[in-house]
Length: 77
Image (cartoon, rainbow, N blue to C red; front, side, top):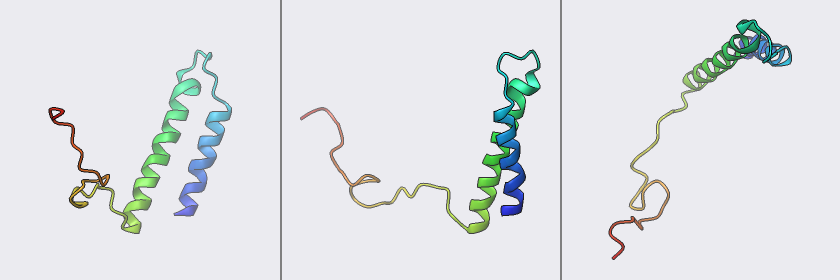
């Protein structure tokens, strides 16, 4: 996994370093950094999947909800 992360990080660093938002070329100004960020996001999803880390929220956290309070909001009564 680390061997695949190295080129992604190098691409991201180079694309951010050479980004020129004033350039006429959309490739240098927007597309290359965007591709690097998408590649990094896909790598993270693949990493979590291989490690078996659940990527969902557990809705059954207990009687107080996910944050431990049961205050609601209701009608103010």
